[in-house]
Length: 333
Image 1 (cartoon, rainbow, N blue to C red):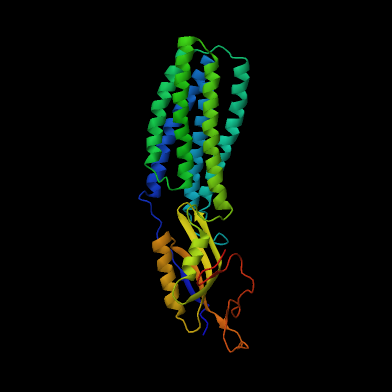
Image 2: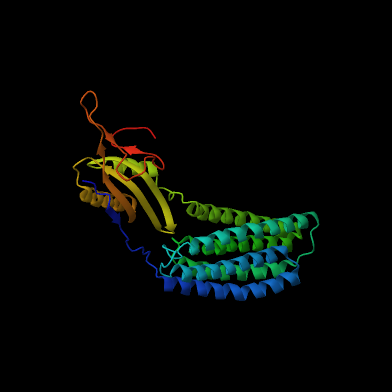
């Protein structure tokens, strides 16, 4: 008897200790703080002729944009699945994180160009205005960072906004140091050097966001979860003879998913195997969104020696597996 309809599809709640409503409140508070400071800092940067301050203002503008994107993505991802969007719009948060990474990279490119230009031909910088503004910026960014640290940072969407603001905090510290150097020594190139430090931080954060969001868009397995290891564990379970078409991916931050075709020895209890595998995946790997197709392995006609062999070609199923095949017992990948 085949049990190809034995189908485990678990949907456990994905809670992280912080509600979506609370996330939106914390992000809105951080956005208000940053927006007011951007206006003040831009005016002072123009008066002081400081590229470091202007770079901080530009970076903070990307911070504000990242928070706006995060808020919009939260609302979109909360919409229920309907029509052709069978997962809803959960990936909107990942798209937001990807956009945040791109804005960081692009802004870093522009600021890097301006910093090099000012290293070659440094303008006069008003040191005390740079220091005063940077110190206020440190306070504002500490408050904004604290607000976002209260939100759910396991979400790549929130983490993207958090990294923006955290890098700005470091940048303001560098700008304050540069301002002190200008005041004490008159070395105007310190301003451009501080800008290059900001650029390095922006490139690092931008690359991290693009890498992590790219893995999700390309359907890669979550970091720290080895599909070969999971496949071997499934194949080693009682009554299981083969596992193939194994796919592990991330729907959105904190929501990994798995699907696989599992073959059970003739006469095996497909329903029991499916329940056992679902339990094992949840307990060992935190995989609760699983879809397992369970079938009995077919017997081939008697071999010349009278032995019987198992094959993965099951009635109604594809003859070519999509990816590695995992068998019970030792084997090579």
